[in-house]
Length: 279
Image: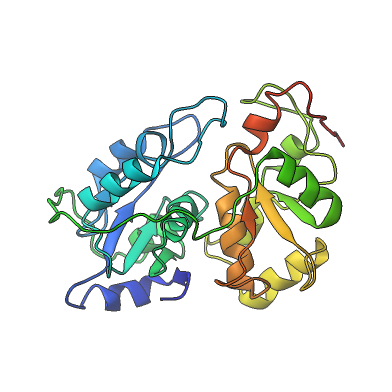
């Protein structure tokens, strides 16, 4: 599968035997809980996976959403029915910014056959495609999590990328500029980082921009073939959508993806020795 699949493509894939494993990862900063949305209605066969509890380790020195321990992630994915040879499609409420975290984790775990549903639940429901409330009981999967399938950087690596390559900050412009900081210890951004708000990946209908438009957006931000590129956000979640968008744009590929700084601003800003730039 390509990294993004449309609603019509997913509808066709669901006719396969076996169909792809569907993961519902709806989540919003400040709520409501994604599980409540899932219980109210989800795609047929979809299994809910909780971002806070299952797609991240507990908050701490690694930030608000540190990467989960490999064994813990393996248990979550096996419980959801993911096998070594499964096709997996993940979706969130709409713009893919949260679903991209699950996509990235599966790729990091060594599982390449995974895609994000373009437009998410909103697009699927808006087209009056089937939605159910029944909670499936998937057969346990056999996936083996082998970390390292996607590159990461720590705080020092992020600082170096900002100096010698392109470090993209996926947060909203006002948080990047340091005008407001509703969650993390300090306002501002990593010195030298370039703002690339995750909301800019999608159009008014919640679907992702065409390939050419995404490529032009990133080129205008300084991304080019010779540049090392990475991404961060508040806690390493929406930055995953920057990594995905870069791959969709064709400026990176599965062999040479952009690096993710998992600790992101939540980790960086908690260290008083790390400088913060504003404006």
